[in-house]
Amino acid sequence: MQIQAVRGFRDVLPGEVALWHKVEEIARSVLERYGFREIRIPILEKTELFSRSIGESTDIVEKEMYTFTDRSGISLTMRPEATAGILRAYIEHSLFQLEPVSKLYCIGPMFRHERPQKGRYRQFHQINAEVLGSSDPRTDAELLALLRTLFEELGLGELDFQLNSLGCPRCRPGFRSKVAEYLGSKKAHLCSDCQRRLMTNPLRVYDCKVATCKEALAGAPVILDELCQECGAHFLSVQKNLSLLGVPFSVNPFIVRGLDYYRRTTFEVVSSDLGAQNAVCGGGRYDGLIGELGGPDLPGIGFAIGEERLVSILQGRAGVPSFSLDLFLAALGEEATEKAFLYLDKARRLGLKAEMDLRGGSLKAQMRRANKLGSRRLLILGEDELSRGVATVKDMDGGTQVEIPLEELESAMAGWKEACSQRG
Ligand code: HAM
Image 1 (spheres, rainbow, N blue to C red):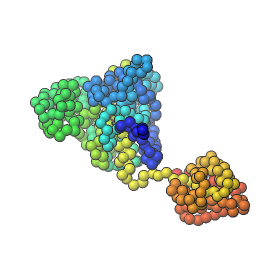
Image 2 (cartoon, rainbow, N blue to C red):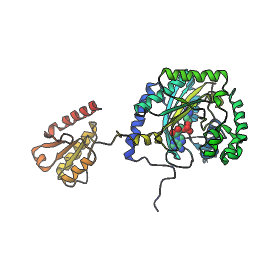
Image 3 (cartoon, protein in one colour):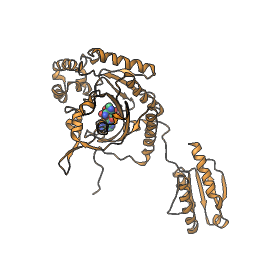
């Protein structure tokens, strides 16, 4: 029987990969311009790391983690997100001793056992960035400005930045009790999940997509009315600095986020091109978490972009990069094939993207293959060329054709490489 991929785990096929490369290349370039350095962390961590940071009563920890006991009897979890792992590494390697503020990013797969649908998978990829050691509201604005630059460079200047503040341990408990009291009076209208959340994590109701729950929230208390003086001033300063940097945003007091570690600034970047799963990016501040995980009492803020969702928006746009070759070598006859095979390797070592069809076949068939692969140049080495010691080289864009003596072929190929590099 044929074996298929695990539900919610998708293959990224070669036709799509060019777009992933483009996204990651631009992301790395922008992140590095804003002072971030890459960190690579393991996919497996001790389960406790996630339950302590993300929160026991979140959907992720309650029902979405891929958790198992390994052969030494330790409970391990495949990372559902990257923040916890980055903080663990930051604390474990005392990175806070190296720099007053650390800016770290990582790119890679995350795992959540959610119900798969368009834009929601069980293995998905995030571009994740964290700034550790600064509570300055300018840091929050700088991070959102980075996202603005990144999305602009990807040609997505229209995305909607939604901002909120979730307060701190001083002001949030008061808000939470008000929410619990308000929603208690609406209990009958809430879905069964939210009725349960009422007991464990009432703020999560703000995030529920069920229509009756949304209606029940119509007159609900708003966190921004309940912020303490410091949180209120911090939030205002974030907004002032965003305006200074020209980052457009809207305030949405319903951004509560699905992870418990957030304090103060939270945000989501939303696209109208996506369906129900419309958040391309989510993040926020988590002052206090580094200390709770056994590190120094330092503040932090970060975000994660969902790469599948980003790629899916870009797929609908023009200018999707396609795979193309610099050179295709077509050969006729055993001797010419052997020579072409050698030049193929030389071309690649010179830095050209080169290919030939090792099955041979007619010149026509080989030319069709060159066209299909979008090759810029076609090099023909037939018996006639071989006997005269030349290769015919055809420019597939302009249609012009020249003969190049075989002893000059390598330097000609080096020249093509030079031209490719200049063209970028
Ligand atoms: P999150 O909101 O859970 O935040 O995920 C961030 C982004 O990852 C989402 O906006 C979405 O684009 C993508 N994403 C999440 N789940 C899935 C899924 N099942 N399938 C496809 N894409 C998905 C975090 O993960 C936080 N760690 C972000 C953060 C970093 N906060 C501070 N630092």
